[in-house]
Image: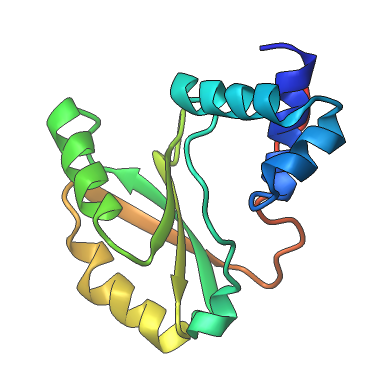
Length: 151
């Protein structure tokens, strides 16, 4: 990956729907080599997809919680069972396995506190291998989905 590829990635992170013509002009190439580079970045896995960034409140998902999960056991079957069950929950926007304690961090969006309480009581508490949940309620998002910095 060279300087031009990094410029392409920087532009596409901010302007994902930019035309090839405009992208080429911004990085200082003609359209054909720019298009080839974008296809190569997609094929290599550097670009993993394109999506619309949606305001969660427009979907009625105005409540966000960060949930720290400590597992009873850390054997492979317990961890895999928890990961599969948590990943299948549509309200789990992010699921990260951590070093140390706690074992996992989940970012969850729901309609409101009552919906989150029901989700925790009825679904989260039944996930396999869980010893303890600690929830932190998000007051305000300051930085969300910032583009990756250029190395």
